[in-house]
Each structure stands twice: as structure tokens, then as C-alpha cells.
Image (cartoon, rainbow, N blue to C red; front, side, top):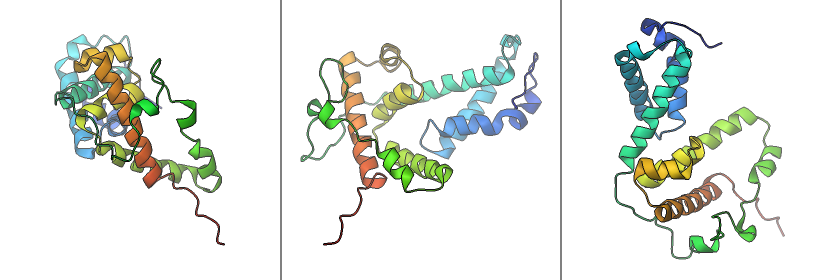
Amino acid sequence: MSQVATTAEPARWLERYGDELYRFALGRVTDAATAEELVQDTLVSALGALTSFRGQASERTWLFAILKRKVIDHYRRQARSPFIPLDLSPEQAPEAEFFRPADGHWRPEHYPTDWAADEASSRSDAALEQREFQAVLQGCQQRLAPQHLAVFVLRFVEEQPAVLICQELGLSSANYWVIIHRAKLYLRRCLEKNWFRPPAPPHS
């Protein structure tokens, strides 16, 4: 159970919250070293801001708020690279064929299949499956360009609104939607190749 304190106790932060902060960070970045760095930066920033802790929220809530800001700052730095479209192979259809121009959602004929239900029926260890899937997804995310990864994480992991993401990363609305479309297509194809493998055809 999470500790609740009305006064900050920095000497116990690592003991109380270190593992949880690390898991949170690792779920939002692509490598362990970056996750560790974000946690360290969070604790250093919290130490420097001790006078701002009033006990109106728990230590845990306060530290996680700082860490979330660190994650956003991390991706803002990552996204400073020029806008570069993902390299989709020539035989693949452009994103305009996959998404409705009015709202950016999948066209019905291209909507992703609910692979999870089929896969789950053939696997007995759901916890192991989840860990394996997260490892594959993280590997796919690592192949995204930094700017595309930043947009993807902020939109689908942090659930930030599009307007705020554009402000945070200095993107136009048009570039934002191109990045979203292409990142979704790339991750879909990467997962299809590495996780959602179609069943083998029956022997004739």
C-alpha cells in the first residue's frame, strides 16, 4: 500500500517509491538507462523543491507529478529533430488509404483485427503473454524516429490532448496528424510481423 505523508521524507523516497517510479518511467521510454535517469532527475528536482511540498497531496502523488513532467520534457527534447516521415516500404499503401480524412480514424476496411482475443485463446499464461507483448511493443517503439515516438507516447500513453502535444513539441496540426497516422501504421505492421502472426495454413 502506498505511503501517505503530510511532510516530505526524502530519506525514504527510494525505499517507498523507487521501484514504482522506475516501472512507471520504463513503461514510457525505450530503455532502462533513460528510465533510471528520469527517476534520478525526479528525486533531485523534488529535493530542490521541498519548500513547495505542502502535504495537500501525498508524497507519492507529488513525486509522480514531477516524473510525468520529466517524461514530457524528455520527449520535447527528443522531438527537436526535423520532421522526417517514417520509411514505409514502397509496396505499402499510403496512410491516406487507411484513415478517414474527416477525423483521422481507421477506414472500416482497414480497421485492425482484434488479434488479442484469438491469441488469448491459445495461451494459458496471461501474465507472461502481457510481458512478452510489452517487450515486443517496446522493441517496435524503439524503431520509431524520436519525434514520432514522442508524439505516440504523449498521445497514447500519457493521453495528452492533440492541442497540448502540438504546443509542447512545436508541431503544426497537419504534421501532428501525419505523425500519428504513420506511427500507428508502422507499429501495426511491426506487431503483425513480430507478435500477431497469422495461423499456419492447413496441410493439404
